[in-house]
Amino acid sequence: MSSNLKILALDTSTEACSAAVWADRNVVERFETGNQHSDLILPMVQAVLAEAGLALTQLDAIAFGRGPGSFTGLRIGAGVAQGLAFGADRPVIPVSSLPALAQRVDAPRVLVAFDARMGQVYFGAYARTDRGLVEPIGAEQVVAPAEIPLPEGTDWVGAGSGWDQYHALLSARLGKHVAGWQRQGHPRARFVAELAIAAYRVGQTVTAEQALPVYLRDEIAVKRSKP
Image (cartoon, rainbow, N blue to C red):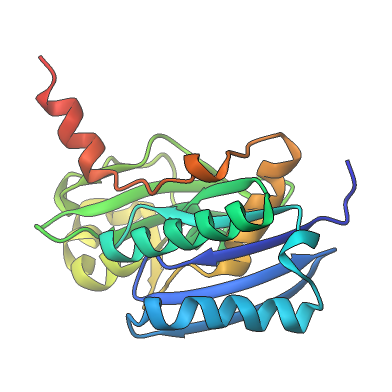
């Protein structure tokens, strides 16, 4: 498969909003914070495509941050990705927002926690491979900060809004396992694109109508309600 892939990526899963085009390892990106996703995302998409000199029909695929994260933000991101993919007849690559943030952090092992409200966090643990891409260690979950599963080893780095909100509880729970944490970290479309490239190469794409957000909290609720 050609290495000269062209991917449009977007992420609206947190208070940050971003769009990026990845074309043959060259990245064009727009990024802003402030929860104005519905106003920002389409102009961002138009801007990065124009700067990259590409039309939607020249892309190989469209990627988006599928969640977990803000319910409203995830609906916006999935809806835009679906609409663009339908219009251009292109496949979609849903990318979890948790490893998208971990990919951004310059550390070999990252514990990502997004504030899930209700005294909980969306949590995932990720280790970087020799290829420079993060891979999950265990499943993503919704959990109270004081009940996060303890990772093996030390020198983990924390990131995400959950650390901003619950750093005392998380630090007390994780103790010596964590070397530190980064403030005000958000996923960015350029790292969604980076993970999407790897997913595309192994055929992990879906059709436009299958490009759905993953709220995670709903999934946990369904599992608990089953007899």
